Image (tube, rainbow, N blue to C red; front, side, top):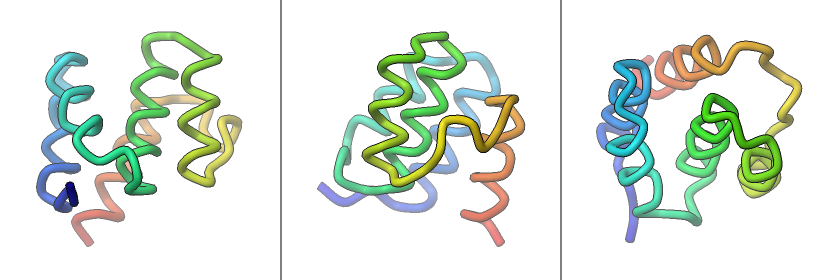
Length: 83
């Protein structure tokens, strides 16, 4: 199932508001979408679950180390989705 930009933005908004479960539920809808995988990776970075996070970063084609702060990373992803 394809996931929309607005769904991904909603997942980020949930995550930034501290609703990890709602954010996680959205990104799990499309585990083939690179941006969905990236957000999923950041959620696990914030959890923290480094092993699971690194798995999703690999799926997204992104680097775990690119951002030290997961919240700032989510803000950057949201900016890219809403430009």
